[in-house]
Amino acid sequence: MIKHIVMWRVKDGAEGASKMENAVEIKTRLEGLMGVVPGVVSLEVGINELAGETSADVVLVSEFASMEELDAYQTHPLHLEVVAFVKKVATERRAVDYSV
Image (cartoon, rainbow, N blue to C red; front, side):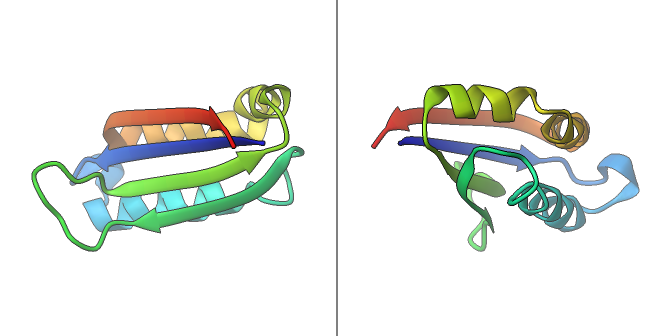
């Protein structure tokens, strides 16, 4: 099993929306991939509730049966649509992928 965790810091005012509106849009778009993109075992998206200097705004915690399934997810056209939006509204991205 591969755990895929990603955290983003979100811009305020990007794409004509507030930071919170963009965070919610990221959450909605990512959650829309569950059950649609093959290989996703689980997927959870959270929006940070306690802002701080070192805090991220949005986190994705997902699981895949194998690294090959994760690779397929990352290149899936629907995932790439979400990536394109996130790149417009995020200032920073951090990711960790590890076996469990």
